[in-house]
Amino acid sequence: MPQTAEETLASYLQFRNLKFTRQRRKILEVFLSADSHLTTEELHQRVRARYPEIGHTTVFRTLKLLEEAGIARSVDFGDKRIRYEREYHHAHHDHLICRGCGRSIEVMDPEIERLQRELCRRNGFRPEAHRLEIFGLCASCIAERSNEDSTEESTGGTEPSPRIEDRSGVTS
Image (cartoon, rainbow, N blue to C red; front, side):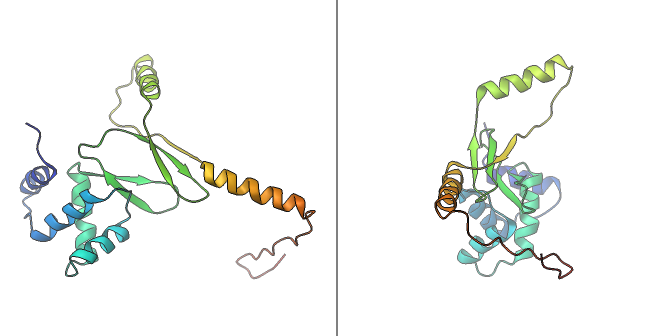
């Protein structure tokens, strides 16, 4: 019979000779209720809204334990901010990440998964984990940029070019 996330964490903590505190239980509850990818800071804000006595360090350490226990998974969308998503009982998926607005879209395509398995088989490779992250622009950002381009064309491109300042203070 499959364990709940709470049972999984309790077993992992027992294995590590750590206590399953009320604070860890509350952080787990808030994390599992999230419907998006969260940074440590974002999770801390959500936890503090419900449980003001829980500090940032406790959230950070508990999140690392959730990751080690297989309940959370870290993801990097290329913006130097690590986010966490549910790993426990959450179907495998890949991400489309917009470089314009930062939005991520979870996608799952059985054909891509089949091709990855075939690629490994052909190369005598036994995969242990994989991630597919595609960076680009979402439909909203494409439309927004298209509108900006058409506005620029209608003004005759007479807008002054932006000033660029490098770190040395030299302006071009």
